[in-house]
Length: 232
Ligand SMILES: C[S@@+](CC[C@H](N)C(=O)[O-])C[C@H]1O[C@@H](n2cnc3c(N)ncnc32)[C@H](O)[C@@H]1O
Image (cartoon, rainbow, N blue to C red; front, side):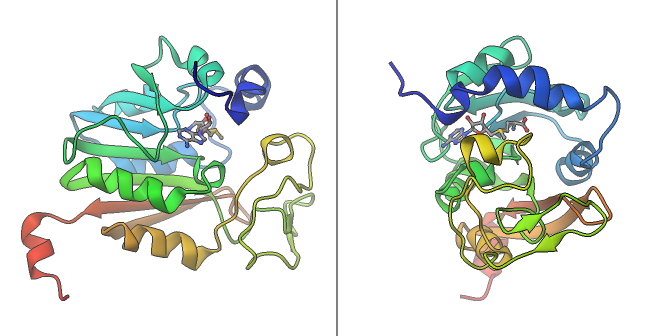
């Protein structure tokens, strides 16, 4: 039997309370827009790393892709069943062949994955040359245990941004971080993790104002030709 995952405890709350706060057809954090802009239209399999309850599967399908998902939480995956094909797997050891996928997405997961640099290396391994990775996560500059977002118009950034540590500290008891904790990657650490995985940064998005909650990144695995032409 798989070991219990942090989200097993909160899967029903995540599905029925946390996600249910977003009214159908609205996009308060700009995640839907970022996914549309960064993943874009395409076809073939799109693997969602940390798919949770599968809330993004319908949009991935609408964009023309065939969604599949992996997650470590059996309780989250129970909600995902029926939304997309799923497997229980760790994002640092994807059960997927090298170079076999045209697209991978990672949505609101990097702060749940202390080994996110290794996850990005896995994503790069399974992508085709030229394949796309869409990352959408909490904005490292304006979200974290160091950020008090109690007043959305005047976010207070305290010491702690550069620490890059796991914490359950939060300005609210209505969020995810206060329940399962979160790892923080300062912006350079996050961006370097993409570059160190051999991915090329292509486009960016921010969502939810006036101080963004979300940062999105489109990265691409080099084609064999562009890798050969790149300066060493
Ligand atoms: C905040 S939820 C996001 C779920 C979904 N992507 C969404 O946007 O609603 C984070 C998810 O990452 C999963 N997760 C955390 N660590 C993981 C790992 N090492 N491998 C796979 N999934 C993981 C959790 O179980 C959880 O379902």
